[in-house]
Image 1 (cartoon, rainbow, N blue to C red):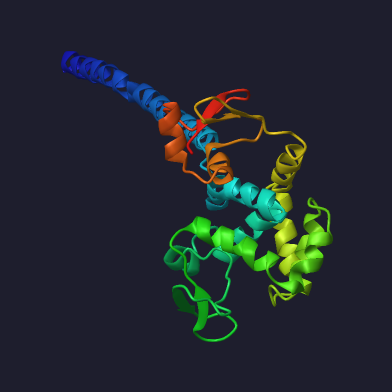
Image 2 (cartoon, one colour):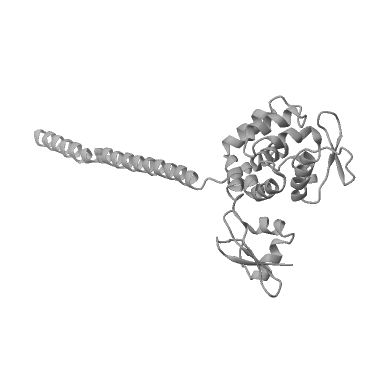
Length: 269
């Protein structure tokens, strides 16, 4: 019996020791935990990377796109009518909601100009009163041209043209005083847009070229040659010479709208 008892005790001891290593699963837990932590770190890095990418690839706002699209037209109109390009652009942004307002989308009316004896196409829209009559244009450029004609052709805006051509603050206040808008904050809104988007720099571009003589050479064939100067664009030249951008590009075999100072361009007659 003593021998059997010793045998049983020995078996129990061996069994106990053989179960011990199974507790090594704690090591697996530790390894698993490390893996989990590593995944978390990687995800954090991916999120940070996304934030950086979004910052780098920031898209222009609708207002910035609007400015880029119509700045040359505003500059051309400033040369013709003496209305600051900054004022024209700011009014266009404000009145058309950066080109997204109903009047701009459906009627190409970027300045909220009402009919006032207008003989062309019309659109009706709620403004100060219900279903007021507004002018409708075939294209946005016509709205810009009519805006210039509207201001230069009415006596109540005459005092504005006595201001310095870069006095955008005076123009903003003068428009409200002359009755262009009923909103008391209209001048402040225009000034805020001009200063936020630095629209005044376009006035300076036009004024900076004011004293620069445009060199024109007429050759024997009767073709007009324009020497490109600072600030010239195909659009501004097309307006200056009463032609089209496509006509200038075709005559000069241009593949893009890019111009360089000193470049000679043949102008269609």
